[in-house]
Image (cartoon, rainbow, N blue to C red; front, side, top):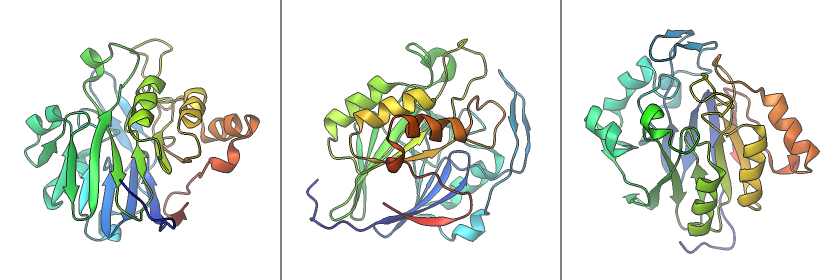
Amino acid sequence: MPKTEVMTALTALLVGGPTLHLAYAGLSILTDPTFDEPGEYPGGATLYKLTGPAVSPEDLGSIDVVLLSHDQHADNLDDAGRELLPSVPVVLGTPESAGRIPSITGLDPWQEHRIGDVVITAVPALHGPEGAEELSGTVTGFVLEAEGEPTVYVSGDNASVDRVRGIAERFPHIDIAVLFAGAANVGRFGDSDLTLNARTALEAAEVLDGAVIVPVHTEGWFHFSETRERLAGMFAHAGQDHRLRMLTPGERVAIP
């Protein structure tokens, strides 16, 4: 999509975990809603939430769009997040999620959805090592574009640098990359993580040459196997820390 020479900044507020509120091109956009207080979620692997949200849904005002990477895991869509979905005009996710939750519009990889001046494209993601879909289920990422605005990549629960490489080939001018990067691991695939870790997040950043990197999904849950400090250290040792925007939950900032 063509851009003007001077782009406006978006603003972002980290709610916690994967939940990020973006003010972008006149839209109020929320990723993977998680608003529960700490607790546990039994299932194939019990998940433990350690910290509650920095703000409530009411604090964010009306939401125009939810970008849902997937619905099958509570650390990406918890009980309060599910309660929020019917009040949101547009919820984008995978076709599988749409089959389970009627309010979701399912998008196949590379399928576009326009809302006002914003084009949102679903992009591939892989929730674990190759072949993980049978156990982890299908997930998606998103790319946001609008004239005069930064191009934004939201990875969703993606662990594959190869998927990022394919996205960068289609979108060679990504300005801001929101990477889910807590090295999520419940032991399902041994030492293979379910999301990017510090090393693979740095590899993804190298693929996304020049993009500002905004890590989310790095805190708040027991199964995140790496700390934010390790992620920051990895970028610092590689001389890439100037590209990293570590957000403080509850504080709204302009990016870039």
